[in-house]
Structures are given as C-alpha cells and as structure tokens.
Image (tube, rainbow, N blue to C red; front, side):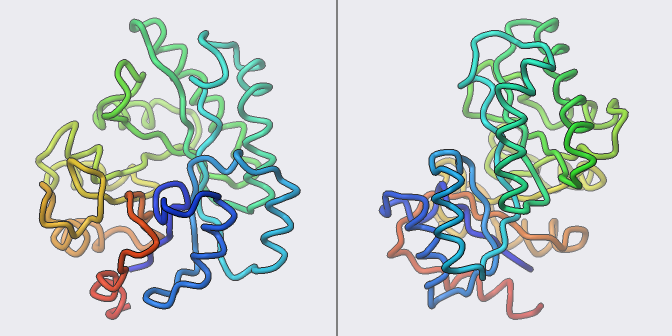
Length: 254
C-alpha cells in the first residue's frame, strides 16, 4: 500500500505549509514520495515554485479546490464559479501536476439549492477532464447543511454525470460518522471510489489510535487493499514528533 502525507493536517506544530513540505522530505521513520493538501492557496505560486525547485522528490497527488463557501454566499452560475474558483484551482493543479482535485462546494438550504450545486459539480468535472485531472466529491460530516452528507447521494451524483471524470473520495472518518457499517458501505462504494483518506473517529487523530471507533488494520487490509492500489491520504491531525512507524505494517508487503 502507498501513502501520501496531507500537508494541511499532519505536522501541525510546524506553522507554514512550505516548512511542512520540507519536513516531509526529511522524515526518517517513513520515506514519503507523495503529498496532498487541502489549502495550498495559502502560499503563492511563485513561493511554491521556489520551494519545489529545491526538492522535487515529492509527487503531488491531490489538492482541494478553493471552497465555494469561502468565495460567495450565493450559488453562482457556472461562469461565475469558473471565475472565482475553478480558474485559480486549475492554475495550482497544473503547477503541482496533480491527478486529482476535490471539489469543495457549499451549503444547500433546500433541494433546489442542492440541484444547482450538483449541476456545478457535473460541469466542473467536464471542465477538468481535458487536463486529465479527476474530480472528487466527498460527503462531509463536519459542516452542517453541506450539500452532500450521504455516500448514497454521492453515488447517485456520480451515476448521473455525463462525464466519466467524477468519482468519490472515500474518507474513513466521514464514512464512519455518517453511516457506520463500513464493510457493507465500502463494498457498495467500490466502483465509484477515486481516492481514499484515513483518520480515526471521533477525534480525527492517528488511524491506529486505540481511542477510536474504527479498526483501520481491518479497514485497510480487508476492505481497501483488494480494490484500491493508488495513494491513501493521511488526513489526520498530528505533530511532527509523532512516529509514523505504524505505516511499515502496510508497506512491507508491497
């Protein structure tokens, strides 16, 4: 199994994303070759280019789009959405040469709002397709009234898309909080999964923490490994002093 460090959540005692980027490349307990990030826009493209010029050993797998809820309180037309979210997201995605973008949308007051947001999602998937960047949607359990809070709904959104460029982000934290019953849920989600992220529930800490609800040894080895061979995002909160030796159990058999 392959793992990528999430710069936005791991090593959170290091204040700057660029410093975390450097730290990832210097880790001794686990040799990362890939990363992902929720909010790379905190750093200018020029600064990122300077930092990456010094160390190109890390491959960028995924970034989040600019969150639509941070850009406007309204549900925009697609042209406006492209202007305030997609164009800048694409600039960063191309700079990092990522293969995946998580489309972070906004809240829905009613079914009409939800339908309009889903239409934006479908159009965004078509927008990114010529650039060979896969779009992901993710049900969120931590944001009230978010347009997507069900993995069943996520499957329907993917199925109703006219593009084959839309998949689901399977996050063990959100899946457990929203649904539970992980064995059956993962089985039905298998054809729709484009990326996997892990963290323990309920504290979004190390997946192997015993103070949590999910047996990630079972989750990874029995549910994820049989169908998913791409990078798994470590989207959990921890400091730079925490050990990553637990990953050896899942990488030694590669």
